[in-house]
Image (tube, rainbow, N blue to C red; front, side, top):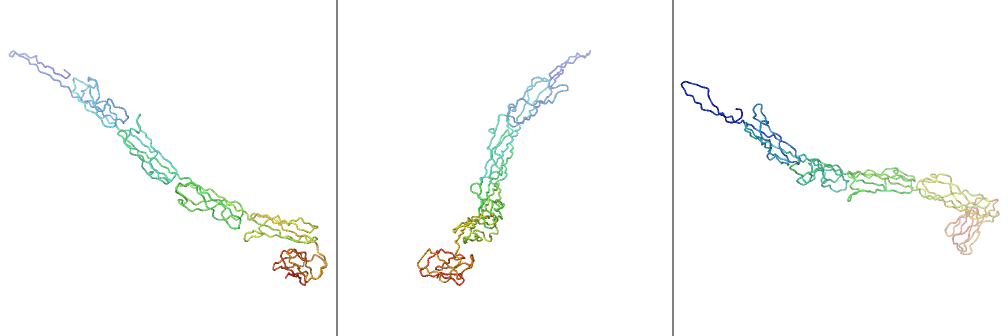
Length: 446
């Protein structure tokens, strides 16, 4: 007998003359051997798929030369692991085997369904400085969901934290996500970054205009700002406004640049736009002075008067040569002729010319009577001609005798060097004499 079971044992083969031998049979009991079938443990990561079956078994107790092939039945699995989906711990029980020679006992195994790694990454966010505190986040991305699942399969409520919360000023801040839960996912969070960029701020130097005055230009004419957020102004900037450019120290007429600078800010990216300084040329009037001559004379030396020079400057700053022109030639008839000046230029002056008048008188007689009381005004007259004569006849003309000085009621009138006719521009009372001195050089109406 080999297999487990009960067998009879009978004795025999003995003889005796004295004994009548009888045999009583015995029993052989072959007990089944203990065989332990242990379900192997199993581990998986949550994948949303129901677990079925097992991970195999181990046997303890086979006699030498025997194995599972000597067992009957079919190995099967049961326990709470069957159909298990969610993360957790479950039992795997083996069964279904049979044997006449083995007393089979089963030991459960364990199924461990681990939570799947799920990464929740806070999205980066960017904004330009606007003076408003940042709150919340810019969403998240998920990495690790099993097929068919998404954020709706998570518990809790997505929330945001990190240094980004309440951030106002330009800079980089962290955005952290949190608040989610799951039985099947081991959630880890990856922070995002909030970048608050500086806002563009344009500082434009104002244009300036001045007329040439010989003084150095310094500073500027102010600036305008474009780009401040609501409620902010230049008082929110650092540094001190300064000016540069070719305008600094500019004196002469021309166009120069005014550049602004010196401001700083953590929240504004400052760019500067230059302004222009225009130094206009000053107005300078060159007036040809009136002149006189007799018709037989050549033109006198013409002169001019200047009006408009800045303090400390005179004709030495002008370029070119002053030229006078008149239509009167050597044989010009008595009358009034324009004296036109020209020929000057200046970088710092706009030159305007004003004509003078050349008066040509008829030549006087060469024999002149004595001076003294030459004429007595016989009536109140506003427009009256007087002729003054020197005391001694002159050998030849022209001879410069100087200017007669005549006053009418205290108002001086000039007579020409040769005592030519004078047009009275004042009023003289009747009976006022006009007299000359011994040299014929001075005369008064008294």
